Amino acid sequence: MKYLKIKEYKNLVFFSSFFLFCFCFCSPKAMAISITQEKKLAKKFMKAIKEQKTIIKDPISTNFIKNIGAKIVAHIEPQPFDFSFNIVDDNNFNAFAGPGANIFINTGVITSVDNVNELAGIISHEIGHSTCRHVSQMIDRSKKVQIGTIAGVLAGVLLGSKGNKGSENIAQGMIISSMAAGQTTMLSFSRENEEEADQKGLSYVTAASFSPKGLLTALKKMRSIDWYGTDNVPGYLKTHPHLKDRIIYIETWLADNYMKSNSSNNINPMKINLAKIDSIKFNMVKYRLQGLYKKKDTAQKKFAELLKKNPDNPGAHYGMALVLERKSMFKQALFHLEQAILLKPFNPFILFEISKIHIHLGNTKKALNILEKLDNIPEISLQISYYKALAKLELGMFDKAKKDFLKIIKKSSSSFPKAYYYIAKILKNNGKNGLSHYYLGLYYYEIKNIKNGCFHFKKSLKLLNDLEKIKKVNKLLKKCKK
Image (cartoon, rainbow, N blue to C red):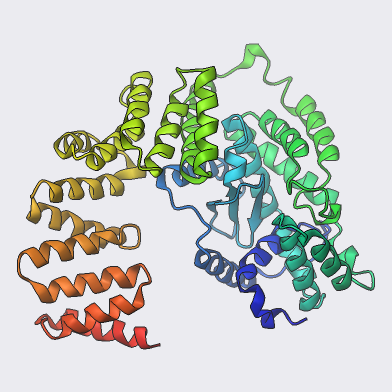
């Protein structure tokens, strides 16, 4: 079975890459591919992942994860790679390091852990894998194995992990047939790799003022949850093996390196304050991800249970509002946001959601008043600008709205493709049909509706006078044909 010819597994290629780079099966003494080779591979790897659109782009959540990662990386030895931290839209309790120090955390991890120290411990462990270059060692060793063998194993893992009815037997068959002649030893996991990553991670996370006990409690959760949620996946294919041994190792490390030096007499007040700030943000992000990405009915039920236990839980009100907003239940969503802001006055993320709901309900002036007061919030500055422009458009402030939408497109057109649509709408009202078709073409092109994009580009060519825009349209039309 040739890897590049498995057309029926077109959607599995990304996941195959996923599992390939999760595997940490090399000896610490193994050779690693060169830094230059790994940088090239990392670039291709990231491109493949981005094309699958499984990376979450929510700025509030991603900035929080990046900030935790940056705090930890600030305390590690100089590295040949620039670290990146990404959230994967996947409910499995998993995290992994890809080539080139690209770290991935599943939503299932963030929504399952109980505090920021557990999350930091998991991120720090993955950073440990990267600094030890375990991934590059694995890649070097994998070159000695036929690519068809690897493809068979990875496709089998994917089918088995999806939980489709009857897929487990297919997966097992593929794995067994692909790993004939003793090839299973290739994927035997190294306890040394995991312990080394734990040791590095514990050191890093402690230096960054997080509690290393978080990694211990996170591992205990992993052990109780089971990463794949099924006993049908062979033990040697689990992403992070040896949990029992790792728990014992970490307990020993904590006793020797942390507990004595962090007695009640030696607690740093600054660390307590930093932990408190991070914990508040963590709860917001945890409930935000649940509200935005979990199945709507499941999430709504979960938040209802949380609020029944504790009606004064601002995070649960916030998460419930996000779910209700997804279900277009705007009045109910506003009720929960108003409860949340009473409990967390002036919280910018809650206020931002309130402004969005007011736009949906037609309370545009009230929305704009709130948005005008939300300044200096880097995580959502672009989002605030977008909704300000939208409110101005609804209020008939067309010139101001157009200027704001143009600024947004200049900063990040891919984040808000609808900005093109609204500019086209304004231009059409002003009788500028050529420019209107031009921006509609850009809108449809950006959202991958190539047919409609080409239609409007062709219309615009008959009416445009701007040579630069005509040149751009012709260039895009050539791409459309390809």
